[in-house]
Each structure stands twice: as C-alpha cells, then as structure tokens.
Image (cartoon, rainbow, N blue to C red; front, side):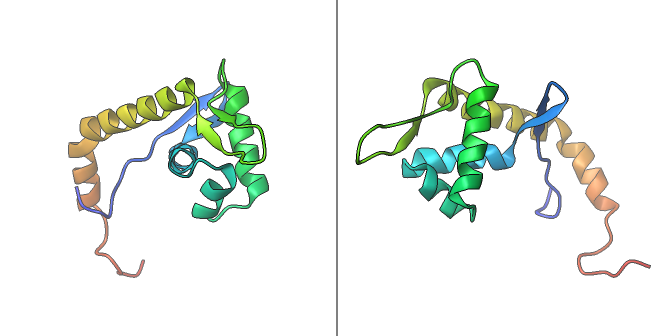
Length: 119
C-alpha cells in the first residue's frame, strides 16, 4: 500500500461520531505537551475548540480521559483511562489496516494516476 491510500477509523457511540484520528491525535499532543492550549496550537485549533473536544471526550467515557492540574502552573495530562483509550484506538487501527491491506491495494489499483484530471 502506498501513501495514496490509507484507512482511517471513526468510532460512533449512540449513533454519533465519538472518536477518530483527530481526537486521538489531540490526546497524543496533550500527552506530549502537558497542556490543552499547547496541544490545540500544535494542531492549529483555537483553545475553545480544543477545550470543547477534550470536554466531550471526558463526558463520553465513565471516567475522564484528561485531567488538569490546579494552581498557577496548571497543565493537563491523560488519565489512566485516557492512556488506555489512545493505546486501544491505535491497536484497533493497526489491526484494521493489516486486515484490509490487500483490499486497499486492490482499491488503489483502481485509482487514476496522481494528478490526472477527471473526464
């Protein structure tokens, strides 16, 4: 499989998009930076948008996936649930990619050459 095709995974809960590559990437950035605002900036998002996404994830699961440190230094970190969520999503993503690799190769073979115009 080349860089032209890739499988992305979106998980729905109760009929609504709940979790996908973007939210998982946000959690990974938050773990790297230790900050909700820095994670959002790294992804080109406003603080408000970032905070709303984190809040929606915190309310989606039985226990929060992100916690904040009180006080002047502040900061944020992934909880055990958050760490488990990221790992589980990445495991599922990898398993799905492996399971569909041959089909994606066949699908890619049907693509027009890169840069070709549609008729």
